[in-house]
Amino acid sequence: MPLYELKRVMVGLDLTEMDDHLIAYVNHLVDLFDLDVVYFLHVAKQLKLPDRIRRKYPDIMAPIDESIENEIRKKIEEKFVNRQGTEYKIEIKEGDAIEEILHWTGIKHVDLILMGRKLDLEGSGTLALKVARVAHCSILFVPEGRKFNLEKILVSVDFSKTSALALEAAVRLNKRTAVQIVLHNAYEVPSGYHFTGKSFEEFKNIMKQNAQEDAYEFVEKNGLQKDDVMYSFTFDDEEDPGERAYEVAKEMNVDLMMIASRGRTGLASLLLGSVAEKMIRYDSEIPLLIVKDRKENLGFFQALLRL
Image (cartoon, rainbow, N blue to C red; front, side):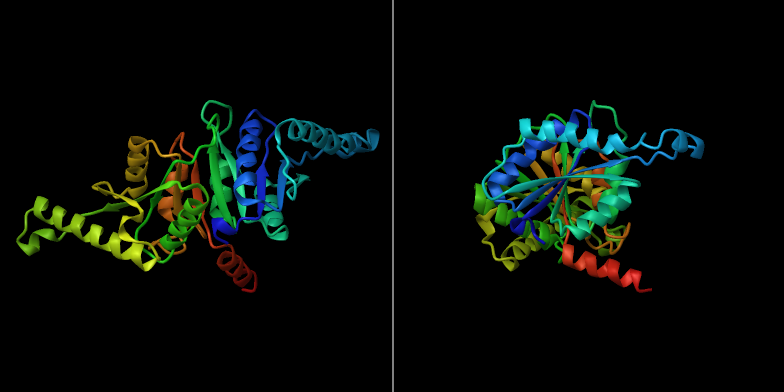
C-alpha cells in the first residue's frame, strides 16, 4: 500500500529514550494522514526459567506484562497527541521480536512500521535490518533526536517499475505538504567503454546525459511534468548508489530519504533490495523510508508457505 493510503501504523518500542522520539514523530503522521489506528508494540524477550523456580514462584512472570503496559501507557498518555478519529492500542508480546512483528503486522494489516535508528543511545540496530528484510509493509526509520520536518525529500531511483512506488509516495506526500521532491540517480560507466573509441570522460558524459533523459521520461511516465521535481545525478565509481544518495542528501540537507524495497536486483534478501539494505546499514541522521508494496509482498509470502 503506498504511503498516501496510510491508515494503520505500528510503532516499535523498546522501553528506552528512543520511544520518546518515535511517539513525537508519529504525532505528525497522525496529523498528515488522519490515521485510523496506531499500534504501539513491545516484544519482551522470552525468559525460560528452571522448572523448580516456576513451581516455587508460579506468579513470577505474571506482573511483567502488566507493568510494561502500564509504563508504556503512561508515556503515551503524556506524549501521544491523540486526534479525534485516531485510536491507539498497546500490544505487549513475548518471544522472538522478528516473528512477532511479522505476525502482527500481517494480522493488523499494518501499512507502515515506525522504528528508531539509534546514534548515541545504546543498541546495535540489527533488529531494524532484520525487520526490513522480511516485513510485508513499508518501514520508516527515524534517527534519535530528529524532529519532524518535511520541506525537502530525496527519492533514490533506478527508473525501474519498483522505483515508481517510491516516486508515487513522494508525489502524494507533496500534495499534502508541498514538500520539494529531489529525484536522485547514480549512474556508472560500463567497463567496455573503450571499445567505442571514446575516452572515459567522454563516455561518462554520455552516461550522465542518458540518465537525465531516462529521468525525464520516468517522471513523465508517472504522471508528472518535467519541472515538477528537482534532479540530482551523481557518478558512481564504487558500485554503491546508496552511498551516493546519502552524500547528496546531506549536501542538500533533505528531511527524508525514500527508496523502493526492490529494484533491478530482484528478490535480494527476500523482500529487500541490496541497495536498500546497504542504506539501512549506513549511520545517518536522516529519516529513511523503505517503500514496499504490501499486497505484492503478502502474496509472495503466502506462495512460499504453500511450497
